[in-house]
Image (tube, rainbow, N blue to C red; front, top):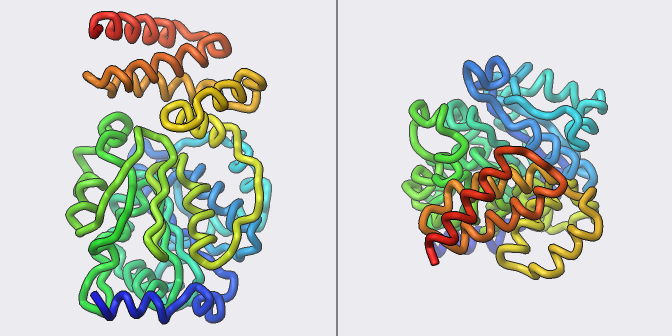
Length: 340
């Protein structure tokens, strides 16, 4: 333990920067096929958001996958601003259609490595020995390691020179059991382990936010994000861990929407609601409605959670009229009345 603490003091982010320059590596799963219908792949939204934030902070970005070459993302919306920006950038798009193999980058130096999620990450990344070697050597050289959503699966069982593992005793997050049960039912029987259970079993200290809300955990030079909404925040936390100040930016509409949900739950609720009502077009209203819908389903006997879910559905309803949303609000109101 003492030797590990000393290494954290001696090997600094400045050391990593001096040896790895401005290079960062994004790692994606190569497991996917048929847009996630046959085998799940990686999350394009996470990749393109991470690429944009790193690039806007002056960092050179490589993309790698286990075997290299073209990789398959799960279904995504090409019109999202970060996806459109990435796909319109010929140089960036080329890095994805011809990813580098993990074997080819295993011995290269990077200031940071960020592992993207998507359920495919549960299958091929945790068993890739080249990735484990790269993660260990990068971290031990003073680099920053990050992962988001299902990406933290790759951090399990990474052996370090001191005889321990990368996650032992470390604070982390990742796609939670609650989120998995709500959104991953189709693939759960195939998973080697639920991610949250695997992280806890690896000796990590796991924490989570309510489903699909942004949650980023920084433990020294190890940064993890809980879900897709945590991607940009996790990248900015990595940049801070590299000894830099993240460049100012405007949040995307879906990011702003998840912040609204968080703030109405545990922040300045009045201010958040006033900002929404002043300009609803700045938000992705279907996302707010969908979050309320699923939160109501998962609330169980938690009356406060159900009340908040109904409130968020009602906030979205005037701008997003759907029969199922109206029915969910009525059902939620009925349950609240019965629980008084």
